[in-house]
Image (tube, rainbow, N blue to C red; front, side):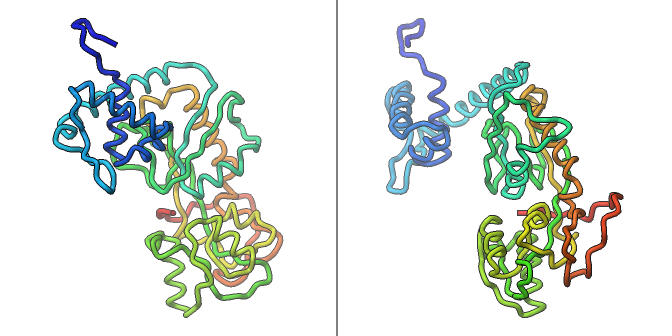
Length: 327
């Protein structure tokens, strides 16, 4: 495309390619982030470089691509361009009244399990049939300003950003084991995740009791499978452990490792019809499942150890325990 002077105009969308390569350090990683093939990324990066007279904007190194001086000089302008384009896109999305399309939600593994488990449940505010929910499980909250996700459900809201944040509820956790299995061994997170409150709590019990470790696993589904198989005892969210017929609680819900959860969305998108509908559905789900999330729906079998036998729930709501972060 030519501008009024006969010169080739910049394809502004190629600036997005340039930024993705700068942030991810390779054509392949940038392609994964943008959902494009590596050859497409390479071709469009070459076009972007050609628009500036053809100098390479990256040094090609064995470990990947690194911005050189020429590329670094363009980075601030490209980021300003991206910010303006994303702002327009968020406002366009917010102006649409349609209750259809895909809403991408950034979640941790426990919230991902909870939402996925309840997609078919009837709640007071159902998810509109025209909306496709896309759950993206990761340990890091997506960058909502860059539309890596439309909203996030997280236990640790960010301290800054033009964001709308509201509390959803809390997940309780307890120690579980396979019913009838009296093994004192533990199923816990890996050493790399030793900073998680659940991991710290289990390590403290190990130091106090001198118990052994049956398995270290980096995800809750792997830990759940091992506990169900009888490998040992471990910490699980109550909404998972209480609903598994193979498991029994070893303790009451542990207040010191309960976790508050929040919904986080960019303010520009807060009133988008699709996003607002998903937020309402998530909030209704947390409200409807409050007793299960808090571990108040004990099963038929008695609890053992920990804080003593289970008490029958009388329907009243107890004040939530003090909260800390979860994995």
